[in-house]
Image (cartoon, helix red, strand yellow):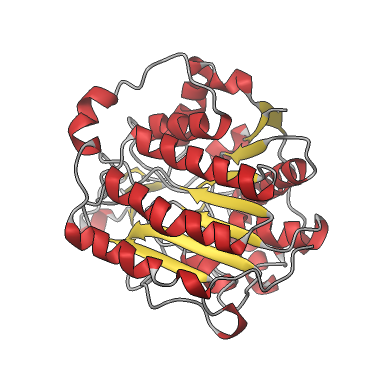
Amino acid sequence: MATGFMTDTLFFWHDTGTAALMLPADPLAGVEPDAHVESGRTKRRGVELLDVTGLLDTMQRVRARPATIGELLRVHTDAYVQRVADASAQSRGGDAGDGFTPLGRGSAEIARLAAGGVLELVTAVASGNLTNGYALVRPPGHHAVAGMGMGFCVFNNAALAVRHAQAQLGLRRIAIVDLDTHHGNGGQELFYNDPSVLHISIHEAGAFPPNSGWIDENGADAGEGYTINIPLPMGSGHAAWLYAMHQVVLPALQRFQPELIIVPVGFDGGCFEPLARQALVVDSYRQMARLLSRAAERLCDGRIVGISEGGYSSGMAPWCLVGFIEGLTGETGSLTDPWAGVTAGYAAAPMLPHQQDVIDQAARLLPSITTAVPAT
Ligand code: ZN
């Protein structure tokens, strides 16, 4: 059996227009039009690098298909789905809600194709036809909430995957481990009261959304204890993230005993990333993917699906993707990481005490996680 890989050329055609990084272009306000930071370029380079390293050939292609309206409505409101469709039908597109989620013409159809492709991949993994899987999509999803797009995210692909697995695939207890460097606020909000979904997010404290993703956001009602945030200080790197994996993420998964693990992963934790200030290296992503794959093998027959989110360093993020895929597949690409020499000092950087404090605080939340929700 192989690792599944789902992508589609149309994902790279989702048109976010012009901006200065993510600031909407406005010549009258001194914002010169440039390519929007969330363009198709970085992820397209990622696919090309997977091809050049030979990793693409080791994986089995899964074809995307549009999500149905009914599938979208498991997570999103009717009014929001309609609003995205209406804006996307306009010749100049629009915005999905927060002013930082541009839609181009046809973006609704492309976002539906991304979401549906994720569901196809999850179906293939859950049915045992694939070992595990990775979906490389645009637009991303983990900031999107039920009634609004946020932070470049239109439909919440990871949340849709969870509800699809529960509604259609006979799986009940599902873990989301969000490794994007910004807070997985969308998944947190959607599952905040739901003990059938363990939502863990490692991210840079206070980066995006602002004032979101703190340790005391720990779930509510029946879901109390099933949301865990690890808001790392600026400058946290390889050692801190791996410590968080060992001290919090892996023990939490062990306690929860998921039947499926979904990993929204952005490569914006890289040390040359323009929209965050963490200091991860390519090997950080390789090691985190390996640890999660092994946990999935122990806990749920290897069922783990990675879904791409952010990551905006067009030079380094493609290599972080390669590292993650190597961790997922156990295969090694034919090329050696050219960033390794440049980032050797970052990789060796020790974890600082104020970084460890945050992770140790999050680890104290572990005892409230149980397997109280029965598996199917
Ligand atoms: Zn991000």
